[in-house]
Length: 348
Image (cartoon, rainbow, N blue to C red):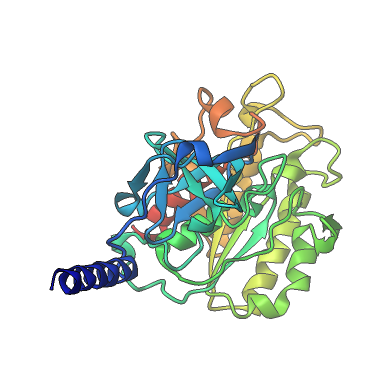
């Protein structure tokens, strides 16, 4: 009788464990610290990630103690390190993650994180409702909307990606922005081994069919025309080309909502704000922004000026933290703040 009782108790416990794993109740015991071998740890680019459901967060690289991720499902995480482990005879890769607010730091298996564009990661603004669900956002411009920090791309987490996430579009952003892109010109450039249109005119012509399918279009460009030796010429010439290209977009898709996004703050190598600095063509960065605003408004596009509704994201005092190169290119974390600010501005 006792053997019969013990046998059924064991069967019951085994069934309970299986059921608990299925419903996410049971958590396997933490790894024995001594059994986890760290082969190497390396610094990584700070890409943004979200956690998968039931991901386990660990307080140390040896996976000795785990913490539930339940309270962090809407948190954005930024990777700073990666480590290769050997545990249980298998090779594993773990990331060192820091929460966007800098309050939490954990290690997590790379198999338990996902891109912020994943549909499972839901941070849609309440005020957005369902009015943007299914909407297709297209982007034309330079390195800033492309998600280039001056040294590398923060993949799938450019500020337009974040804007789409906060609006709840649940669609992939069609991002045709390219580093060093200009308003004036017809250049192409290689991104890796892929040849892509770089300047605005070339990008629009290459993506005519895509433009026709877009509901919302962001145009964020101009800072590279202002750069000395750009070849773009006078401000009047730059605006002539911009007007022509906005007309072309409107002709291709009359129903699309166009947002003309003014160039963000820019600094020189000495840390001075370029707002009142004239380039070799005789106009200041302020002149460029003012001319773009006037043109976009006259053509029925909504003018987006981050300096007006998000003045504290990038400032003269925080630029060394918010700009990766301290001059013009936002960090991955700053891209999230810009995307959030833009989404808030769009839905207000």
